[in-house]
Length: 126
Image 1: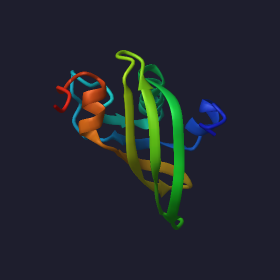
Image 2: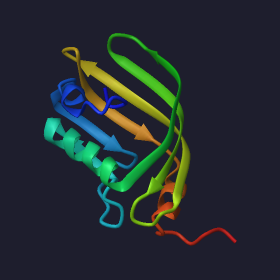
Image 3: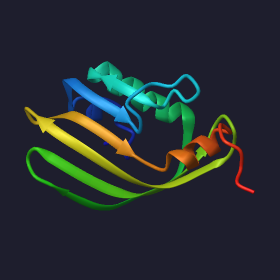
């Protein structure tokens, strides 16, 4: 649904008490994409934050494992950071848990060092 840019349909799949963790559980002022987002409003804020931060150039889904309660997916991506114009490339993994047929937990893993470099928060490697 997100690939089709159908955000309302995607948000309809989110449990009202969902917890979305974007890489790091604690929010950080220097990178607002970090943090825990709660409920559908939190999921909406999370998705809007991604749209505001990145122009996606490539998003590859390589695998998926799961059952009726848990899913794990992985792949790679390349984003252009809107604020800096820099590329952010990383492998990724996602863990989701389902409750009442809806996404109740969502945690995304990526290369945080590459993310922080792409936002000019770390110096380039020499």
